[in-house]
Length: 189
Ligand code: SF4
Ligand code: SF4
Figure 1: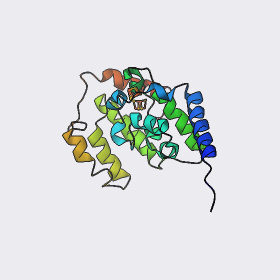
Figure 2: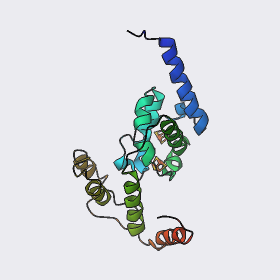
Figure 3: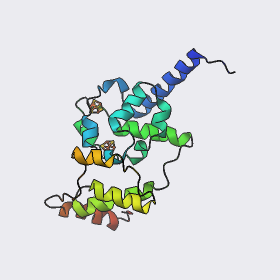
Figure 4: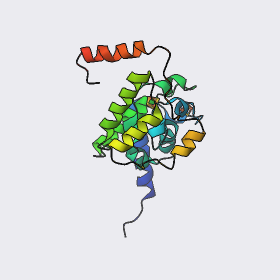
């Protein structure tokens, strides 16, 4: 049986943590787990680990779990979490650093990630913000996984995190204009 080498394991953990901190420019210990980031993240409803939990995984050395998380691929780099964080923790940079490391290790995102991105953008263009429940229903049907997340839906519903009806912002003309501008410049949205 292969002998477990504690020093080697600690060394590997330290170097991975250092790598993430160097690449992101963020000190993981700066996060004190208040959860404000997760509360504001527009895609947290679809993540397997919230932004706060991704940092926790890294803080406690559960790197494999962080590398396998679909959250790092779902992050839209919108910086809402960064703006809300009382300690200025740059989560989008951490997500990016973990994504790069996952990519290097050949850990690929789900094939349906493009579908998720397109449905997310369609929802934002239509309502000025994402309608989580409508988007997830469409995503599950189109990705042929109709019962995915079915067990977490009631909890999200009763805690007010998702709503059956979309909330349209007052004037989403400005949002539509952004989409038009991006298309005019050849963007694929
Ligand atoms: S808001 Fe900042 S301090 Fe609070 S959990 Fe998120 S990253 Fe950590
Ligand atoms: S940058 Fe990523 S993790 Fe942060 S709020 Fe936006 S989507 Fe969520």
